[in-house]
Image 1: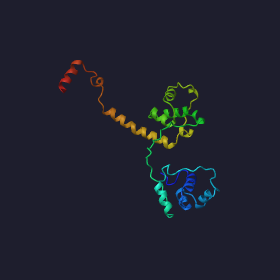
Image 2: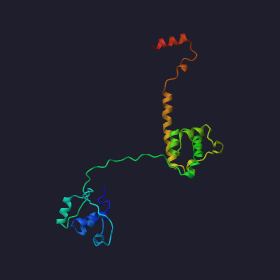
Image 3: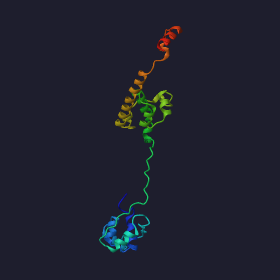
Length: 210
């Protein structure tokens, strides 16, 4: 929260017109120079500005003003807010690509598909700012402009930074071993374990293991 009024001149106008506070007190509270406040009082500055009541705005209290009027050395301070404003989390927006660079996206997608097959469609969508349908068409060579698509590094095209590309590739590389390890530790299909064994032999092995 700021320690000065949002509209200092309008607040100063109201304090000059409605209180007996000194120019120094008003200047200190509004974050202005005392001569500027004097200029407002003399109508040399801020002509036509409508005053804003700092009490109604919750910036001051009547008690603070009355106490400061009795004591010229007292300095006014912003009153604490009565209501705490909830924090609003900013929504994530899709990656914006300038119109001049959108025609380069297919080339970048084709480059990624060729050089980094470990990246998922979601990774490519986040990195380049494209759609799953476009990726599928380029992968299947079903894009309307397939004959003219060339593999070009997205960093060279300015569609992402080298840091962003390295990060997403490294993350995909760390994700790949876990999937491989899970497959290696898994059970073999029953077709492999019983290949070449007659039904009678398979039953006999089952009885032995039971």
